Amino acid sequence: MSAALAPPRLARRLGDAAGGLLVLLALVGAWAWASAAGWVSPIFLPSPQATWEALRHGLAEGDLAAASAATVERMIYGWVLASALGVAIGTLIGISPALRAWIQPTLEFIRPLPASAVMPVAIALLGLSPGMVLAVIAFGAIWPVLLSTVHGFASIDPRLHEVARVLGLSRRAFVAKIGLPHTLPDVITGMRLSLTIALVLAIVGEMLASQTGLGSAILMAARSFRAPELYAGVVLLGIIGLLSNVLLALAERMVRIHR
Amino acid sequence: MSRGYLSRLRGLALPVAALLAAELAMLATGAQSDAFARPSEILRAMWAAALDGSLAAASAQTLGNALLGLAMGGGIGLACGLWFGAVPRVGRLSALTVNLLRPLPSVALVPIAMLAFGFGYRMESAVVAFTCIWPMLMFAQDGVARIEPRLLEVAQVLGLRGLRRAWKIVLPAALPRIFVGLRLSLGIALTIAVTTEIVANPMGLGYGLSMAQQSLNPALMLALVIWIGVLGWAVNAGLLRLQERLFGRRGARP
Image 1: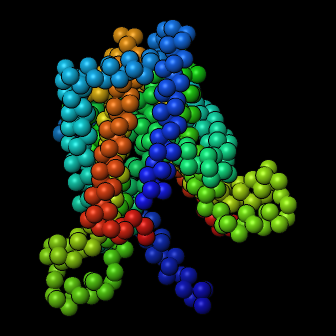
Image 2: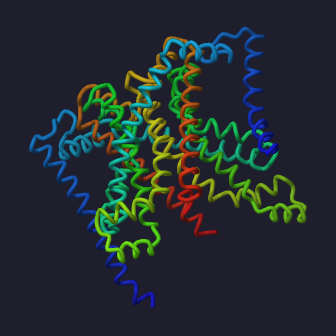
Image 3: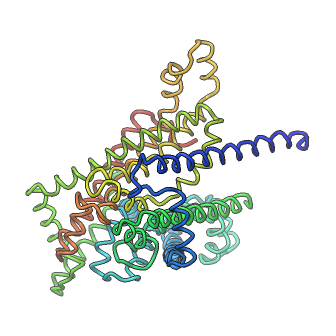
């Protein structure tokens, strides 16, 4: 049955993929055409060829590779820090309904605050240092993980609490054996959002504190009117965003299928 | 009723206690800092900024840029989302391009917008617009895709076609989801507007915040941080109430 169904579905998928690729190529073609015809000034829209050339050159001989590595490193450190702290604090709050009632309203109020608005405060506190950027990334990216951990613990079936009591599980054993496994899908979803925020804040931090990375590289390229290099940096940031999104979406799907 | 009141009071206890503790601790030690100020000083700075009109002017600039960007980007996203949802083949064909463009961090566009428009409301609202395209597109497309098939049969029986079908059947049915997209987009628009102002654009609340930090005025800096938080929270809470009043629970969840 499924064998009979498979070929047409596969054919449609292949057709969609090819069509999608064509649409993308047509858009890049339109970009190339528009810059070749001189409709838009090359000062702020370089041709695709110039962008590609700047990308190749920057990765092979320039410092684009080093800048990308620095940004990715910053993003991942901040994200890991935010995730670890988020799960730890979220567990502490989530395990106790009383604590939840006292603290959650405050958390809900702080969460929508744009994390970049905290950056001037962090600069006043920590100066223009890599540690400042890391602290702001951790602060901004912690909320999705923290709140989804709290939510995960709050949504544990009351009967599981009873089971734990019957089994005589200690609080620590309850967290390790029932709580955290139950919360994992929520946590992974939160971590996916966190990674997106971490990338944005890494870029903002690099721009404001002039730390090595793609954020400061594209800002410098724009200030000195080197449009192809600017676009090469933006393309790299797009690729970083895309890859991190795809990887976490895969992890999310694996966890959900596993359940 | 009294339970809800009580739990709200309980939620307030922590921030009030923390503010009081900070006030007393800083009074007792006489601490001076570039990053912290006593809550009473913060309140005074906010009051002064409210009286001289600078707070209102900066808020109007930030909100204006956010709304302008939301109108442009949200409009593009809505149109594309409705189209992709109504004609699934177009949606499938454009999925690759959308999925490649969407994860691009919007702050990365600040330097491009600087080159194209210089400083001012145009560059800021352009960055906001790019960011707002995606949530509106996703929610509109999703809203149309989830329309009850029987409603579309009704449209067929009534002989409604093209724009009339879109206006009378598709748009009203997808509206709850679109409104959710609008609410989320406005929150994102405010965040991106403030971020753009902090990073580059010399106007609005974000620039005021940077200036307060650079002129070593922690009271005003913290007052602006709190004000930005209150503004974002109030806009979201207002739209959430409007959403509940207009659509009830529809659109909230699949």
